[in-house]
Length: 75
Image (cartoon, rainbow, N blue to C red; front, side, top):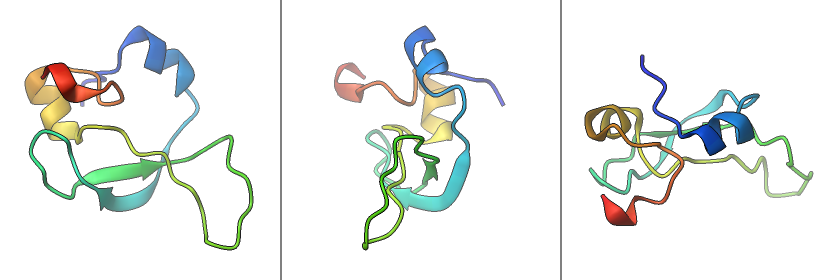
């Protein structure tokens, strides 16, 4: 799979990995198919783990050739 992250997010999220099944909604297709990623800045809390969710699902990121972490307002 092609890595459609911008240079800023390639550096910022270089050590993150998928740890959650699809729990977030893609901003383009509106389907609930965005995976949660590890959060290195996670602080323990009684409500559970705080995942990082990109703005776009992998499919929309590839189809639109856009960074999945960037805000999709201009898409």
